[in-house]
Image 1 (cartoon, rainbow, N blue to C red):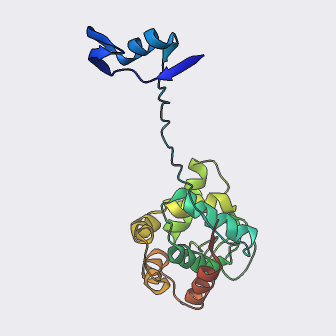
Image 2 (cartoon, rainbow, N blue to C red):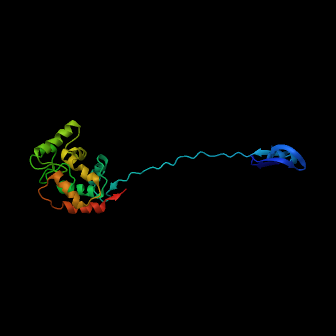
Image 3 (cartoon, helix red, strand yellow):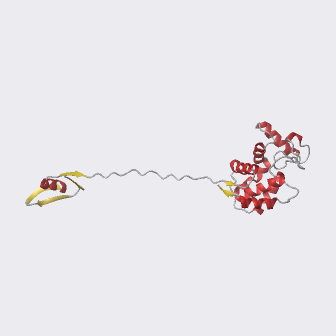
Length: 210
């Protein structure tokens, strides 16, 4: 039989009739009297593993949107730090008013490639002035993409100087749709406001975190 006892206690003086015995540990005296083997109990302290907290990034999605709308919404969040629902919704509302998310559309409704839109605005946000229209074409040549296609236009849109100037406002967050319409105007410079704001409110209701 093995008895497990905690060590560390000592006794001196008499034990079981012995007088003036040298001080021994309690375990040693018990071993002499009982003849049992005393095994020192060892405490094993398990190493504590650090707790890792993984932050899961959330992305605004629009389940009821068209494929083009979903693509633009996703890329806006990928290419910028805009994470405010109203900011995203306002940008989306303005794009809808400009082109209904059609890349190969010339002002007036003609569906033509970049080089065949001879007047008015062209593309996703209806680039109208010579400088902005040529900016899209130059960007496409430099980065080897098609100026008539959505992916190329979205990349140019977020890099265009006019958008970069107002981007910090959109990235700031915490504002209303009405507030974000102001930087939207500075970005696009529309002639007719139309249904932009109503479209933006509609997107704000449809966007969900996924």
